[in-house]
Picture 1: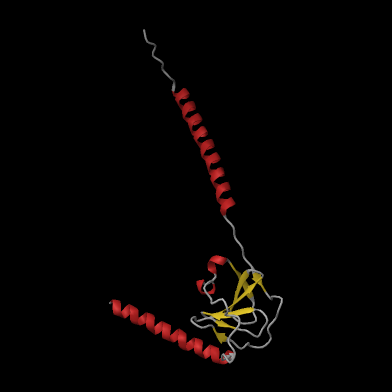
Picture 2 (picture 1 turned 90 degrees about the horizontal axis):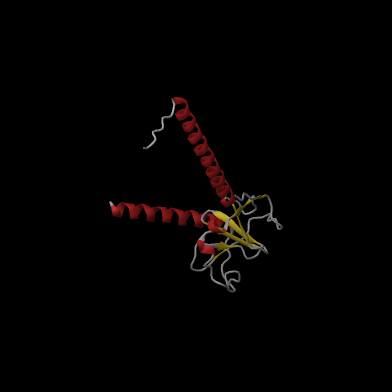
Length: 162
C-alpha cells in the first residue's frame, strides 16, 4: 500500500526557510550579474578644457558660410565657428563648445555636435576674395535678428495649427 508522509510543523518551516534562502541567493546572483552588465555599458565623459593650444585675445571677424546659419572665423588659424548662440571649435578631431570665443571650452561628444557641421560646404574655410568679413559686434546683432525671426516663425507655426 501507498505510504502517507506527514511532516511536522518544524519540517515545513525548515523547508520554507530553505526555499527562501535559495531564492534569495539566486536573486542576489542575478542582481550582481545585471549590475555588472549595466556598469560595463555606462561610459561617462566629462571634459572641461579651460584653454586650447591657441588663445584668442580679441573678438574675431567672421564670415557667414553660404547656405547656412554658421559663421566661421577664417583669420584665427584654427577651426572656430559661431552657431546657434555658441562658439564651436574642432581640435584634433574632437569638438568643443563655449559661450565665448575665448572659452572656457567644454568637450562635446559627437552625438551632441550640431548636424549642420557635418554638412558644411567643402570649401567653407576659404571664403572667396572680397567676401565680406563681419565684425564680432555686427555678428551678434545679426544673430539676435535671426533668433528673433526664427522665434516669430515658430510662434506663427503654432498659431496656424490652432
